[in-house]
Length: 422
Image (tube, rainbow, N blue to C red; front, side, top):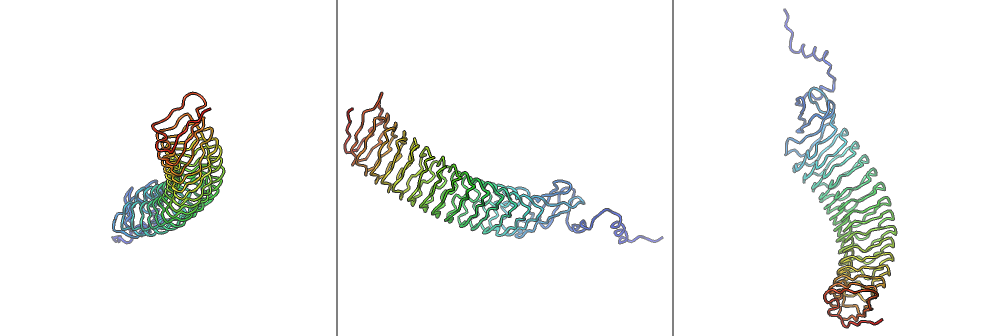
């Protein structure tokens, strides 16, 4: 009796078993029923035909090519996703190539990969997750494919060497803190599809000198451009209806801002410490000068508050050293605490006849003021409201009805105070 050689058995099995040629391509891969390891990568089965990348097995691996298919449990699976934080803090990782089968870059996927220099994102990807490239400090350039429609919060935050970014035309919202701390980012292209710029989006992008906001944008979030120390000029399109708190706070090189006529709100501290701001026009659509709006804008010499504004917030013009003239409309009813304190060159300001309250230290240390008339409409003057106005002569008109209330020593240090009679 003849014996059947092992080689013949293998040939027979190959002929009769339903195994495709593609199967043989992955025979080299180690596999079990749910998990497979390929090229130092760990994969896990998602469905009977799809799989995800779980992690990198070797921390010392520097260059990765993720395969589009992997063998798990005797079946070929398409790699469609990469698990959140899959490569988090792999400091030796330098380059990654992602296959076209992947549609999502997961949350915190490359967070803390400080030596990652290059990554190829395929045109199949539609979403870049939260903090996907957070603190990838060596990443200088990344091409975001046109297929991407969403960029998550903190996606490129603190990529300190990133210099250029073009946001694809499918993106409608730039999330919060997406480019926060990208201190070498010089140029950004924002497409006309974007309708909102999120909170802190470009905060601390200290080398960003100019940026064009498209006419599709309707809102600018809190601190969106905060501490962009080289930003010199910005034109806000007419489509924008609100600017968030501290949006341009600490933009020390900002000289001019063009604000559109339809804007309804300029948030608290929006231009705080914009020390070179010379000119800003507040549109008539604004009804309130919010707290801290122009604090320490050292180069601002004059301001015209539009008719319709009823309140000037606390610290609104505090410490504006060069401010000489303020045109205040008759619509103003309330002047906040410390609103004009330490505006030492302020010479020309008139309290409107509809004003009701003047807050504490509202004009403290305004040594340039020489005359001030308190109209009969004012019912309350806060403590030290005009403290230290040593060159100012005050004339107080009698209150029209009821009682007028004074805080502690509102006119302490003034040159003279005269009560006018009816």
